[in-house]
Amino acid sequence: MEFNTNFILGCSAIGAGLAVIAGIGPGVGQGIAAGHAASAVGRNPGAKSDITSTMLLGQAVAETTGLYGLLIAILLLFVKPLV
Amino acid sequence: MGQGILLSSEGTAVDFMIHGVFSYELFGQTLWITTSHVCILLVMLIIIGFCLFANRAMKKATEVPTGFQNVVELIVEMLDGMIGGVMGKYAVNFRNYIGTIFIFILISNISGLLGLRPPTADYGVTFALGIITFVLIHFNKFKHQKVMGVLKGYCDPWPIWAPINLIGDLAVPVSLSLRLFANILSGTAIMALIYALLNKFAYVWPAALHVYFDLFSGAIQTYVFCMLTMTYISDACNTEAG
Image (cartoon, rainbow over all chains, first blue to last red; front, top):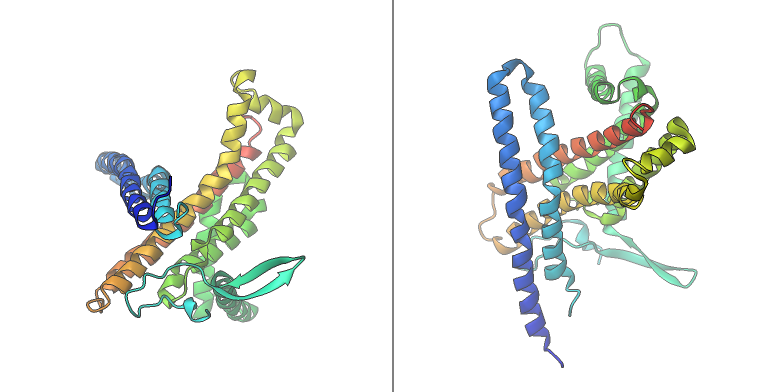
């Protein structure tokens, strides 16, 4: 069965939109990390710089799964592997 | 062709892809010199120029630093402090490598401010960095833990876990390089979208976005890449944990 190019492009756009839903997970994860870092600074203000760098490192690692979703979306939209 | 070095802001064409500058034949394969190569060369020129100035400043260094010597000493002390804080007694051997990739990735990431397409938004560049880290990790693992230690590490906690540990090891360079690549690419893509689709209104205010996507995100990702590289390498050097 043959599909025309516009149909495939439209489906790719829908797929790209669905792929970036992956952003929910890292959002929640980074929020939890930031919240715990805030309470840690509240308990021990002296260790603020250590806490900040640990938090940023953890958040950047947690971000990876969201970025995989973004990568899929960008591939679908701009590289167009299915057309 | 050729004009693609700058992020094009003309018309409504969204353009943040890598462009070929010219091609050549090698063993029957057509290979391209792309804008990534040109941007890497420009980044290297910036770094080499800085190094020449720094070298001249340190040749006539004084006990009490003045002017440019201050800047150079500040950078070296910052890198030394960061590497020493994470790697401890193994820091001496890896200062050169970590310092080099830190400066290279940082200048690459913020080269978006100069109108270049950041070289780190090309998977070829970041994957090469990931491969170097992977080789360093395993070289140091075999050097410090010996073959028996490495085998024992793979059979931890039970021998049946070995394939999973192997996949975990192979995933390290992929995830390291994809993280850097996707972060910088997303910044580049968003800036290109803004310049292409809002080109009537994109005056002054995109500067704030440049500060976030190029400076902040670029600096954070540089820090994260170097931090993870250091953690993995000092983990590999640590004989007790294996």
